[in-house]
Image (cartoon, rainbow, N blue to C red):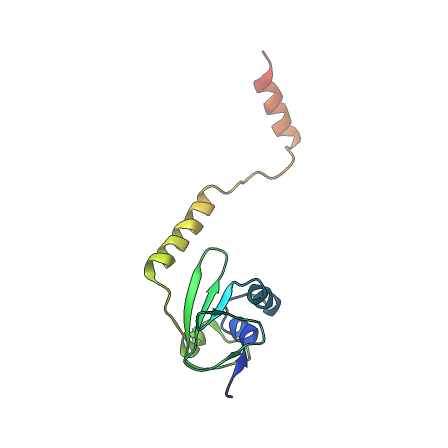
Length: 124
């Protein structure tokens, strides 16, 4: 295999959960191939550098090998090298931790018991 479509490679390397998500990221200029904005059908070759922006992180990846099929998480390291700066990884971990701390745990509409408690608190 000499080259692979960029959207397929991103999906196979588990950068995006679905291939359509990888396709939309390419169309939305969230992916660069060797420093240039890339289309989904761009060909990835061994030695290329791919920069992909996900929700909280901009990842820089070096292509070591090619695959069109989705790999197990343990095998991904054989096919790519993650060159993302450590400070970016730490910032993304901090964002995830903060998101868990401030997560809204409300279950939607109050139950009958909750309503009675609220009414009891509001009475003069």
